[in-house]
Length: 174
Image 1 (cartoon, rainbow, N blue to C red):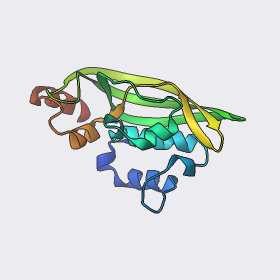
Image 2: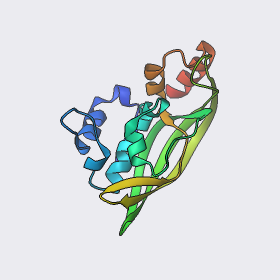
Image 3: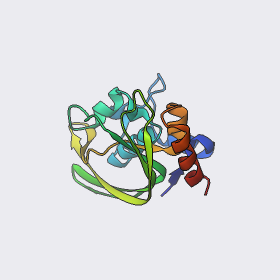
Image 4: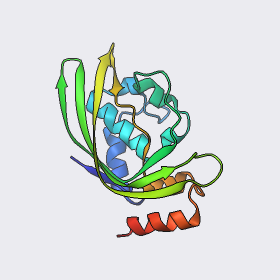
């Protein structure tokens, strides 16, 4: 399985992820075009890692089994993620994902800079995906956003105070 790291500086991986996902004529990936549950989770991870869940997004709503996402006061910053395997039985799938975590951002993304709290380690999440009609939807778990550190700084410049950005940068460059 591929490991996705620091996507902003790895165009080859970006291209591989883009090729793996089917695109509509407008260039956006639509949930109903994704043929299997592993592809749904791969696209979910790719979009989440880029920070797309930090604002309302119709794509995520189309692949979640729940109505609305909670308001998160914590964002997990990751170094990488990897799909470790899947188990598909009939209309239900379990997709194992391992995140290499740098830490968390605490606070509210709007307004004042968030606080970075280092929490290096590995986190394993098992996504449960169910077939609902012709589409696959994530039914469990509802986790907070997991964003690549490079992406958060590109997507939301100023989200961290200079002091917290320096701490995060030192972890990234180890």
